[in-house]
Amino acid sequence: MRLLGLLLLASLAACKSKAPPPEPPDYDRPLGPGEHALRKVRDPSLVPIGAAYEARDGRLAEVLERSERWFLKPSTVQWFPIEGITHEQAEASVREMRRLLDRGLPAPEFVSEFLQLFDVYESVGYDGKGTVFFTGYHAPVFKGSRTRTDTYRSPIYRRPDDLVTDEQTGEPLGRKQADGSLGGPYPTREEIESSGMLEGTELVWLENPLAAFIVHVNGSARIEIDDGTVMHVGYHGKNGREYVSLGQMMIDAGMIRPEERGLTAIRRVYAQQPAAVEALMRRNESFVFFREAQEGDWPAGSLGFPVTEMTTLATDKSIFPRGGLVLVETRGLKSGTARHDVLRFMADQDTGGAIRAPGRADIFMGIGDGAESLAGEQRSLGRLYYFFLKPEHLPPPAQPSTP
Image (tube, rainbow, N blue to C red; front, side, top):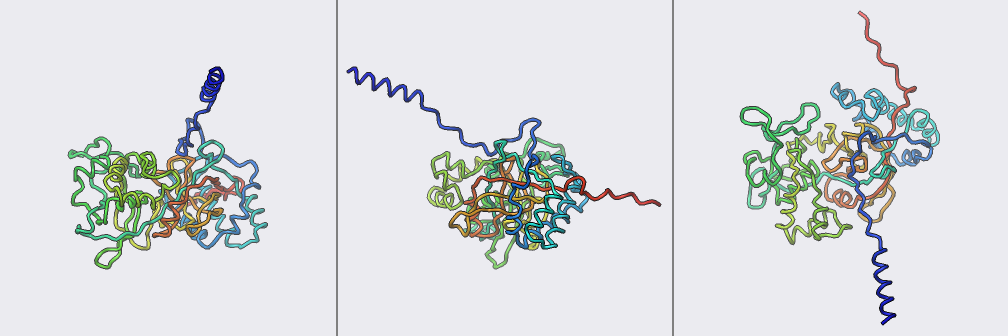
């Protein structure tokens, strides 16, 4: 009996001393008051600039050329300064990087000149230590119809006339009332879908609610119409409500395991339990509206021009400078098989409903099923660097012309 008592006491002591499981990382942790999204790197020589330069391809020059054209628009001045970076500095940085790329220098010479010209910054990450959670997104391809049929019964909608947004930022402000005044927030996904309030504004019909939901999450799609034509659709506003991840809700509900939160698992469970998954989808209050896009302008990012596979990055544009050169250092999948290092120069040219913190970034993976697989499996930690010309290397300000 004495021995049993000692064993019991030891067991109770072990239970009391057992530490609780650690809280899961909060990759969506917002910046606190007075905190900055970027900090200058003390020793830029440690950043793998040479390796990223050697891994470059023609897509980098293409995206930087688009950024440079974007900076020429007078309306882009409104987004600066941000994080101490001026519009002139951001624009000149892109232009200088293009000039360096055109010279085709050997990697050691490129790195030497690059570090003489540019200051190097990094995202503070979710933890204040520079750790960024990289996910992926893509432009899906679906079959559909311009009219409702027995096969295609789930619509995506045009932008409603009563949605009011900020003329400069595009951020939703609310719903316009019959007398022209601004009412409260725009209705939620469940309110929109259950009320039929958008009936008559359908843009295209898809096979099921999950297909429409996936288009909402990605903000664009190519639709192969049942009459043999092809429609490209792109983002045209949102209701401004909170975005909630369907994958995370399914994990919380025990429908899928944390390591399989990609679209493959979501589709599998949806085929078995459509009603249960659709109930979770309605808990995501965010709702996106669309317009038909020209093929040459699709898929468009938030800066108004097409995004580019493995070279366009989406970040939180309320805290990071737009249009600039970045370096992504993380891990990813190659052809859906083994993991490999992702070390690439990219351009920060897009945003997303789920990308709302310094610890989050989204890589555009491409178009179609192959890109969908890569995007669904892209869930890796890494670091995110930004590059801006040092003040002493900025061009002198333009002098006003004299009469």
